[in-house]
Length: 117
View 1 (cartoon, rainbow, N blue to C red):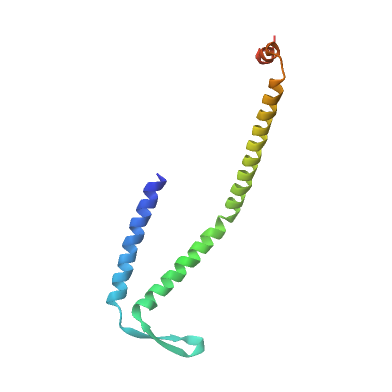
View 2 (cartoon, one colour):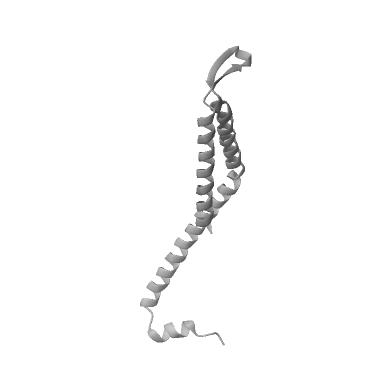
């Protein structure tokens, strides 16, 4: 399912890129942009006036979304470390048990696994 979503996302990104390229090619005429408090006027292509705020909004939205999931990501990392630690402990206990079983007589091994009466 993840591969399907990734593929659909790539198709959507390609389509949006084509729309942005078509927009940029069809809006090459320069416009004057005044930066109000600085009294600076710039002459820039129209597509930059439209696309730069979109890119900035995309980046800010991604940053805010990433910050919103920070606590969950941190909890996931802690849980993953704990799981790895437990797996190592279980593996060590298993190897210690097999070491104990090697020195034990065969009838004792069988008795250990029989249910208690």
